Image (cartoon, rainbow, N blue to C red):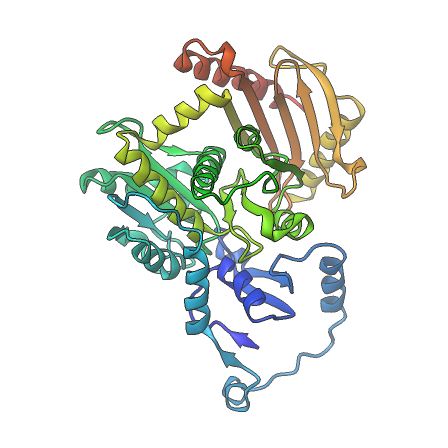
Length: 447
């Protein structure tokens, strides 16, 4: 057993499995979930999380266990069956992340929150090594603590905008340019920044961060002469199509019909060739650049986001203004995710009934827009319990799927306006938000 004997991130484990050529990897973590959900994430020799048939095979093996043999930990250390490898893995992992760094300005004051998790062990040294000297760890969230005591609702998830309120208040007080936040096992990244210089602050969604990072990395690699038509980006089915349009503008492919879960992205890196892979994103704040791991990594995402923020600051812009420039170029994209909690066995039955109704008798309209296509991914290979409803107009759609980890059914709403139809960007954004609100109202009535 190669043992990381301190608090370390889930993506560092993915890297370690590959670096040490292990057969598998095990990470004990509840991630952003409550302590009652504490369990393990299990990795295959690729460094990616288990995929079929190995996931089912492991479950069957666990169910067949009748006896658990025990050896004193000290004995394992003494006889060499347990090898503490944290320091060399830290060095190798951080070096691999820094290989993704792009040159440019480093004048940036940022505040970082690990949300009572492990991210500071890698993100702070990587940022410092990349030239970012003015990094403050948000003190109320600095201590690792699985109860997440200073996070609203004790749910330490960067998807939850409420977790940013106190961090933003502190960032404004100290004159910071950027807030970065990671979930406790440091595989997801969130951020917040001023809308305009000296103005109000606003968080960025997972889709918006993904689009910004894709543009930044592709532009940086092209400038360095390291981007060719053979390269590609990856995203899931429920991640913004803006990433595809950005990749199209650089003349490279997007493999975007991947099911939800970064394990599918990890497998796709090996399928399409790690030497040609550039960047991957999923809407739930997961990103990876480079092929050193096979899981989403908030450390590399934090590094690239800091470099991007410093770059736009030097140009006199904010991240939100940079995003607006991308909307003018690639069209205005608006996305919303809605979750409906349905606990207990009754809730499971309601979710199954809703999914069955969508397949047998989908709605004719949503939000005043005709449903012009239905895609049932149970009929695809590989299959997934998800239905996508295409709505009239360019790239308006809804994806519906039960959560794989929580008693929830999730709705992903997408709206789009092509760049040639945008006259007033603020008005277009408002119209798309209203469009998605109407669709959301109709979805709430589905049973």
